[in-house]
Image (cartoon, rainbow, N blue to C red; front, side, top):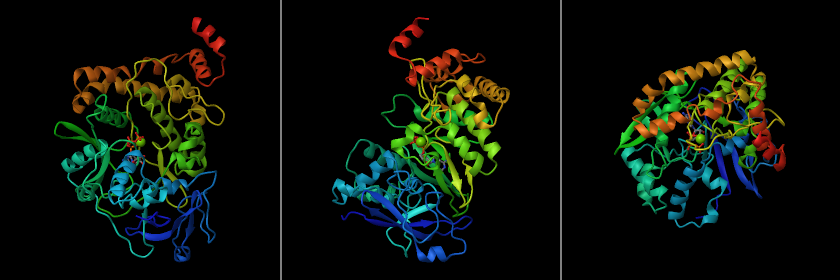
Amino acid sequence: MEQVDRAYVWVWLPGTEEPVPAGMAYQDGPVVSFAYGRRYLERADAIPLFLPDLPLGTDPIRPKNGLEIAGVLRDAGPDSWGQRVIANRVLARGADVSALSDLTYLVESGSNRIGGLDVQRSPTTYVAQPDHAPLEDLLHVADLVAAGEDVDPRLLGATFAGSSAGGARPKASVRDGGRELLAKFEMPTDPWPIVRGEFVAMRLAVLCGLDAAPVRLAEVDHRAILLVERFDRRPESCERKIVVSALTMLGLDERGARYASYGDLAEIMRHRFTAPAKARRELFARLTFNVLTGNTDDHARNHAATWDGRMLSLTPAYDICPYLRAGGEATQAMAIGAGSDTYRMANVQGCIERAALFGLSSAEAREIVDHQRSVIDREFDAVADEAGLASVDRRALRKVMPHWYALADLGTRGSRVRRHAGIVNGLYSPGEIDRLRDE
Ligand SMILES: Nc1ncnc2c1ncn2[C@@H]1O[C@H](COP(=O)(O)OP(=O)(O)OP(=O)(O)O)[C@@H](O)[C@H]1O
Ligand SMILES: [Mg+2]
């Protein structure tokens, strides 16, 4: 198989049900550049695929900020799970591993990928790969792929022809009537019932008043499958919404992901989001809910917005997944402060102290936290029942919902929490840390 050195980006323009070709992504030395097509630029309804990354114009566009590919294009590709499926398929066709470039992953990702872009081999003929298969078949093939086995290409094609959604967990797109769902599979290698834990957190999020994607659980062979309603599709419609991750909004890629912060995202919201005050409040509530439910994997691909060519709108929350931990303090994947304030402790007092970044007073922030705590306390048992969690798993989950460290110093001036932040951020020397620990 030849290396893919160019591919064509098709877009569903807002409110339309058919994709149109927008331009070409091509290998440009070590990076992937992009050029809009002439016909696209002539359309009255043409929109930039994202700004400031890909402004409309005839000049070729190299990725900005030292990125290897524009973030909005990268967001249309797979993460580790999808890459594994694609590698399986491409290598089975006799290609060597050097064929697995960013462009290959983009082309191979399949039509039902997340968002409103698709990447095709042709600028004139749109070919949609089918990627809906029965859950039983998907689960069977997911097991084979996860085990690193060669899968019969016909079987892979019949199940994971698309297999495009990002993220690390085995997952697939499924359809339920007119609705598109994302199915996330429980795997035999899971250290605890992670998928059921995610169900509990997602359900509690809705009960706490967050705008979280609706979920339900299915079971195949006693294995849980989390079914999440997709927010980038409209029921009974072929319309698709362009989705960008927070990583893209912040102008970062995986290598710079540690610089992503809630505070900086909230600042972007002020200028670029529809209903900015509501969105910033919602972001704060998602942050404290993540802290209160032990979801420390809240990285910048786990927040997203839709893009209509002009403005961004926060998507419903997704991938809220509690992590069981034995120790005390922990950090959030995204920093909480803005700019040089790299505070990231998994502690709500530290969030409340930064409420102003989200347009909230300390009292409003405290009210949000108190409300979430009371709903979690009240509803946990019922939701854990619904999730079918066995008793030991339920108790383990309850320990991080909320973890004691999340509540440490709540209502105080947060001196201890600040000290922890100093330790993690390297503000204290080892000698000072020992002295603080002895205090
Ligand atoms: N309800 C949804 N509607 C549309 N897109 C979604 C939805 N949920 C998730 N996604 C997209 O699919 C990607 C993968 O989903 P998710 O984050 O749930 O998977 P994951 O494997 O648990 O991820 P991670 O690697 O962060 O653990 C997300 O980054 C997001 O782009
Ligand atoms: Mg994720």
